[in-house]
Length: 414
Ligand SMILES: [Zn+2]
Image 1: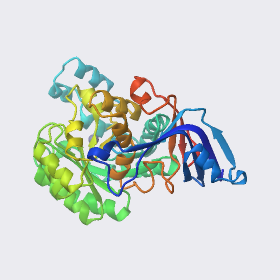
Image 2 (image 1 turned 180 degrees about the vertical axis):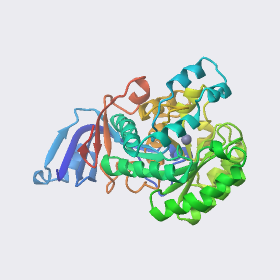
Image 3 (image 1 turned 120 degrees about the horizontal axis):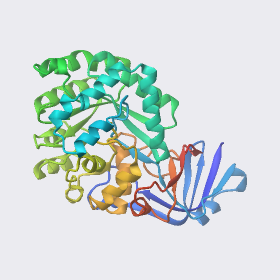
Image 4 (image 1 turned 135 degrees about the vertical axis):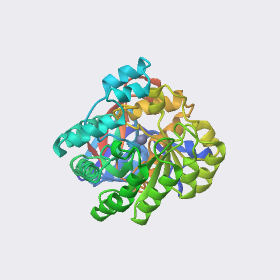
């Protein structure tokens, strides 16, 4: 297909800006009641009210025409935070957890993140690819057209590289745009329990240089938390990654306010994740430094925790993006429609703010804002058709996915 015209759609899209959308612009969305979108070779060439778009087109320019029959058309979702490359499910652990079994007992029973590490080490590269592919294709069905995927269930050089190769293969063999993150600092491996600094040294001296030399990850992420990696250790890892040309992200202040958000603002990182316990002062510092808050409401839901204070962040002009955090432990979902619904219902974001959070701000947090995240001329024709008249249906029609068609670069892929 060379060119395609999608007409008779109710179009909603975030409005592009030179910076991520925050504060009053967090909900900056434009809409066309009877809209049309014209794309050529996968790139949007015209978008607007149908009569305006048609006036600018001659019929011989259009190879294919799709009548959207009044359904809602929005940009494809950008999921900027996942751990979707894994080899095991932890359903039994989930059952124990919801029955109230303390985490330490779960660990003793062989559960927790280290069981995922064990499973990834054991899996062949093909097995790990197949498992990852299943979940990534499920995300695509649910409307995710751009996804970030982290390593971090390897925790040794060889297995981290294996994960990154698998994620590279997902990038090559699926229609999705994939951002790749090295997260060797996801947990302290068992062998280094007594001497975590030694593991930090291994990452800085061996893993990061090897990954940078192979050019197989653009981002580096760290789990900065009490009992995992301290602020000092996180800083050392992220600074080393930056020296090797990687962009930075950080799991910050999820459980305890240990200063992860402050570190994010100081470095600065491109995004900071979770932020359930981040202090007001450190959120202000993030806003000042332009750090994007990647909020993960499905994790709060799954862990029965209070939600991050999205409203306060928006008041403080911190740009908010939304992500699934898809992983086999704390939050097993590939569904951005679910995340959208939670953001609106439980974090009190408006529909427009959640639309920006699930598309354009996510693209900003992956450095892909010029390519995806909104329906602007010159960007990829990545979009969804929804069974509804506005993006509100994503929260309104609960527990299902209203996404019935997914287009990537103008081609229907789900
Ligand atoms: Zn995470």
